[in-house]
Image 1 (tube, rainbow, N blue to C red):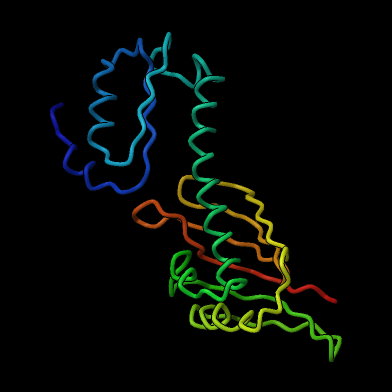
Image 2 (tube, rainbow, N blue to C red):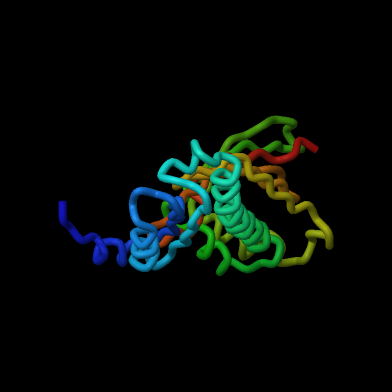
Amino acid sequence: ISYDTREAASRFRKPALIIQGEQDVIRPQTGQDAHDAFPHSEFILMPACGHYGWLEQPGIYFAFMEGYNAADERDIRQVLTQYVRSIYEVDSSLVYEVTDTTLQKSGHFYSGRSGQWGYSDMTFGQLVQTADRYNRRGQIPEGAPSKVEVFDISSQTASAKVSAIWGFDYVLLSQDEWGKWRMDKVLWQSYST
């Protein structure tokens, strides 16, 4: 079989991890050629390993995979930290960096006046307005909560929790066509007191 996928690979914008065994029946240059073709790739040549690295050297193989996921986790944490900063620092430009108009956000809020819980949706535009207005008088204290917990990362999706002064958000993220993590869906709840 003779075909050349280098042109298509050069248009692939997401990160790619290429792991090949040094003793693979496929010559090591093939892995290097793939690395050269994919613009956002990392190439690892595993020593003393054949074609099935996950079976022959699972400890080393999966350590490489975990290290690769660590970059995703760092990027996800940065996205969610910027989301909180957009509101704390009254900077709606950060909202545009972490999500887009397809954002689906809804949640539960507690009314101290009525003592009841309510539910509402929030559009992308309303999130931008919230970032512009929520802290414009500077009422959020220095050191207000800003905690990010990443639960799960897959090749295209991730889940996390953000705890902030307004409550907590459960966030689903996805990678866009360039491999950048973006907030996709948010379910939030305010504190009850």
